[in-house]
Length: 334
View 1: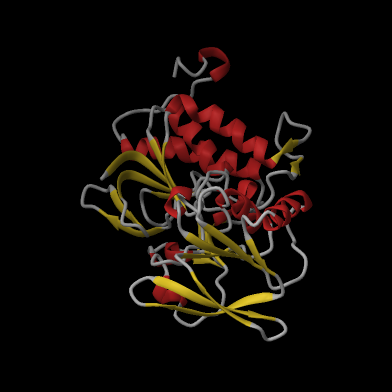
View 2: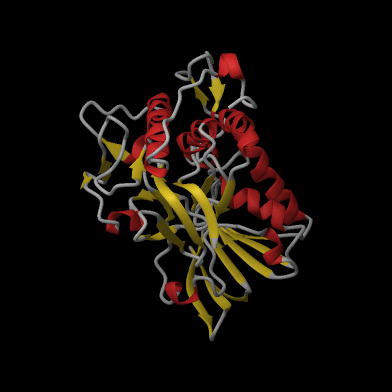
């Protein structure tokens, strides 16, 4: 079981900055996120989008901001569980918590900080019979470990950047890679689409345009699927893994079942320290709500700072947290 002072649910920019504020008070952090990498929306949806309201940066690319935050918190050595959704929260008699992820990972934490942005980004699933039956048995919605597909037959569905990028990458990993897209043209970056088409010309990948998966088959594990083209042509193909990449949609997810006060899909907090109605549980960033709430990254940074000092008092009720200025002490002096 993972042991930590603070478990941060959500590894977006506000969750990452919370590590810095906690680190200044010598509290250890572990971050959990459903996405396979840190950064939240900034990494998954618009890494090349410029952001203009970060103090000290007239303009910074979203992906670069995440890179800078990771560098900033590196001295505090945070740990991560990525590609897993946080499912259960159980409060212990001593006021601490045991959290369990969708993959069964258990974390014992003294404080919980929800920094889930707009919520848990869940995959948009195709409407297919038996889809749920084959989840984790041949159907994956994210690529957590590419080596899982080494020498396997893989079929990817989608026309955006993720589908194109993984088609290119897995062409050198899997024994066979096929890409299915329901339209004639791709939505992703033109240069990546061109790489996919070049791989198809070289016989390294197969492309099915104007097509959709219409049926899944198999016993204990997915072993085949049916591809139906717009003209009615049917293809029966063998497959080890089917990866539908149709984007992500934000949902509050299991957090809604944790006994927290919820208003319009957001967690209500006390603005003195961004604590929730459950002692020891905080919510910062876009996931929370209060009168006058502004959904800005810089507001989330402010919330993280106040949360950290309150969390310190919760963990160490007999100690007094002291505000130290990094301009005087630096990081190593904290």
